[in-house]
Amino acid sequence: MMPRYKVVLRLVLLVILGLLPVDVRAGAPAARNVILVLSDDHRYDFMGFHPNAPQWLETPAMDYMAEHGAYFSHAFVTTALCSPVRASILTGQYMHRHGIVDNQRPEPRGTVFFPQYLQRAGIATAMVGKWHMGHEDDSPRPGFDHWVSFPGQGEYFDPVLNVNGKRRQFKGYDADVLTTEALRWLSEDRPKDRPFYLHLAFKAPHYPFQPAARHKGRYAGKPIRYPDTMARTEGNYRTQPRWVRERRYSIHGIDHMETGRFDDDPVPSFEQWYYGYCEAIHSVDENLGRVIDYLKKTGLADSTVLIYTSDGGFHMGEHGFYDKRCAFEPSIRVPLLVWAPGLVKPGTRVEEMVQNIDIAPTVLQLMNVARPEGVDWAGQSLVPLLEGRKVPWRDYILYEYYWEWNFPATPTMLAIRTRQYKYIYYHGVWDIDSFHDLVNDPAERHNLIDVPAYQGEIKKLRNKMFAEFEARGGLNIPIRIPTGERLDQRKLP
Image (cartoon, rainbow, N blue to C red; front, side, top):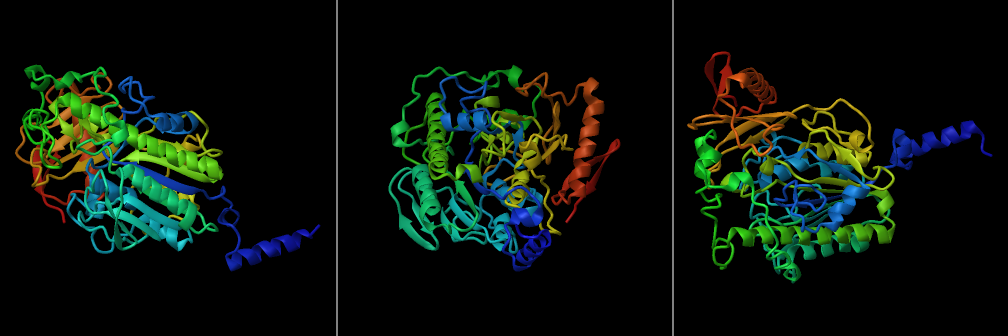
């Protein structure tokens, strides 16, 4: 047996040479590979296992992840809009910090995505799917050794993909094609002697809700549970701000739905696009299942963390809306599932409020990459929660959305949400703000902003929200800030 002092000397030498595995050097658990699967506009409760889901919706892969891994029941985005959310996931920052505030604007020069830190640590990285930041620019971005993407929203069928700088025509359904390309990289192209991070981002179930051809019509005629706030009655809108009432008839309202923008189909009925949405989710789930099957068959399951989430929720008739953007629950809540055999106990349920800004620090910790010093990340690592540990955690989340000139029906808003209450500030000429008691009114039917009994709680949350945004540099738009009994005008850079 080798003398102990020689073992220590050998370990020291290996550390110096950089040859010792990261987990031994750091005294941490073995580093994992990570696959992040990101869908588009999949709301939090449209998964087969969720009690609020349509009883006929089939999502066996998501159900499997929830049963054999971790399910985060209170997962939120910081901005319910495609590009800002994707930037928040990849930077760990709020929209006001990373500066990608709409679906057209490219990334500001100098933006650093967390896969760049992974690359520097010797980890193989791949991006396959929807990028969208910069809209029509599908060129490879920093942080990825392998790149497969498309401009803007992309196409559901027969997509043209930019593969490492060269465009190629593919045949088939977008999610099928992207999954095949992702599995090809895993099996053929990735360096087998290095840990890997794979970012797989689907277009589905984004409007106009097109499933794979094999799933089209799968749910036609199934019973639909219409939301209570969908009815066109004054009772639904008596206490709501004016913009909520008016949005019903706007481009994102169910009484004036978009048509002809993406295809030549006639105006769909509510039932048609409801079924299409569910069928597109089923198509996503089927491809998520392909990833799970691959990890099992190749033996990678025990060394890989699989994360599934979405870039935002989606209204399915609530308040007369479709689309997202606003701060109502169907818009800001998303699925978050984590499957990691040997790390995450099957059936783990996490009740803490988590956000998309938590993904970047989570991936770095899972891969034993040190969090870079001086980086302004707003999120926290989810690893302690995945391990079932009780740790100090946030008791509120912040939300922001900036008005877009091309979709004017939804105003600029800032919001704060606790376990029970939500306060929403609408910047501009709107008549009233919003305050909801989520425990007693989970559908957010009643706006309590003028109810005397709640004024103390409203003031506390309003002051807390503005103080938080100001401290983080988030008031970088002209905004009126409540201060005591009067309003001051501030404009921060």
